[in-house]
Length: 182
Image 1 (cartoon, one colour):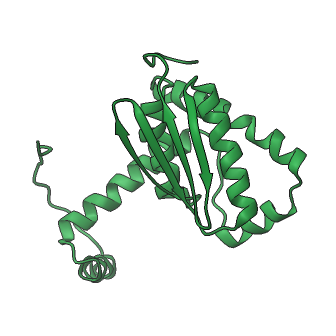
Image 2 (cartoon, rainbow, N blue to C red):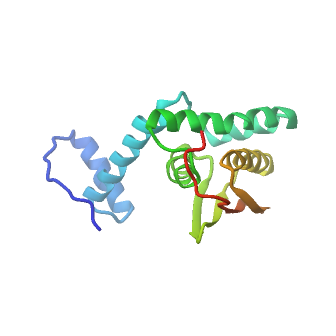
Image 3 (tube, one colour):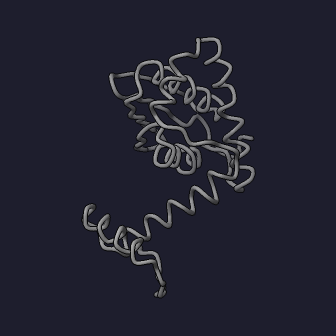
């Protein structure tokens, strides 16, 4: 099913239009598709993700920070993961359950904050969550602890966790119907 669309006319500065046209051509997209994608990203970032305080830092800086943090500090930092997501969902009026965490947190964080590239599959409430990253072993360790803490708070069963050279993969199953797990 296609989303309904509406026609709108906009005035854009010539240099911005030129940049958009070049980017659309580079990505092999129509100008309309590119602008729609960009607007969607801005709406998600401005209206959803920015409802909680956050900062954007380069991956290089993040990697340096992670390399300096010791294991006990990691453990303290990951404890905040579920609380941050629960607070975000409370503000956005989303139930705190696995499907919403996948859709409204893991997908968005991966796409907009650059923590990881996220993908998943679900077959009969058996989920496979894939977090691809190039930020090194320490970051993968932090990410594994962070995601594990979030999944534990959702009261799902983690069947398997694998940490590879460039990815962390979780196999998870629902143990009961997901309600609002605040």
